Image (tube, rainbow over all chains, first blue to last red):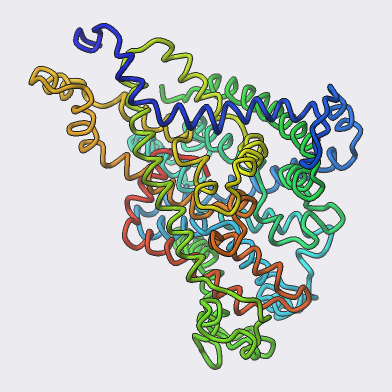
Length: 296
Length: 285
């Protein structure tokens, strides 16, 4: 930094620059955060006056099987969808990286990610429809029986994971591909001269040197997967079902708040989710810092 | 041989990415009454635009196999455009101002304040969404455009953070030269810095636009009423109004096609920019 920017403070000017953002932050982030914490200690049902109940909501939470079910379902969903997106995304990125720089292919792969979540949910509901859906048409064509993908308790959650993998995999691949571009070409050329095949190159060069990017993409994918809502709200019937099979935590909070009007209980759950994500993020940040690239 | 296999992989991925969208269009162009008998051919037997007509409220719905629910996707499309446009423009400008202040101005409490913004970045939106809904309700702004845009109009922590990073990398020399010429910091920001950061601003605006256009939960909660209903909420409500056993697939797909058109326009006009910006920032999904 130089002398000119080191002059005495710009307090007043800063206030002008920051005014809109400060108002927005105060009214729609800080205030609701404080209020959310307060709601979580009341029995408010959005009709009568809220009454202070201390930590009752949290005690109830620990004893609520549906809450634990929601955590379990969310965990299973996160594992499935992140595994598919990272696995297939990595494959696609590696192939793109070694094969072509085609902008067209990259653009086409990212299109599903740009489609609104509701539209994606509707579209796949139709494709997976038990009677008229195209996927079942293919299955029957291959001599398999019809499947009620979104109506079977066993298949509903994997189906939701696949639906969102459809929309997220190309995006993940693009992020990983961008990371691979940072690996110097010479390393590949040197290894190729040493006689390494494509598989050796992938496991010996690409994967180890990609580690920091891989960790970053993993964090982004995990956090967005925990926030699954649209697909469950639209494509499952009854939403969150069948038999609680797809009731992820976001959707459960939504139901408690806006179907049962238990704003206090819903807020307690939301705050618990904040804490869980905070701990996860903290652990991931520690891991991220530990995993500096072998390149540096 | 290896290369052929790799190309096959890529082509398969592209087909899997795009075929469902083609199927959406194909279904939207199938007459509602013929769908059951014609659900697998790659082209509809009697292609029609009737389904678009009825979701847009031009054709009578009931006469063509619809559920009879009144639909006015013109209105929803307009609402979506206003909602997205307002938030994109205002948020980008206000967050650019804030990002610049954090990157370049010196004032009391700057780092603490910025730390708060970053902390807010980690909080899952549902936590503030509940009280924000209550606030909008208390202010009597349910089913109004004002209530709909309010929480995102002025700032999001992500946008401030993103732009601050860019302004940090902006060359000091340019601003200093302008300072020596006697320009105020306010003028420098608007006349020198902003025009030179068009790229990142556009990138951010693009992301915000896509994000807002796709947003579902908030508009569904705050503005489900006919007059302020946006496209995504309208699609969800349309599905709920459609009979469970026989969803109005042709109509739903016609509405879906409408919700995807802006996305396709973005891809056609800004494809390179879009891909570059995603690769560059790995911004939130």
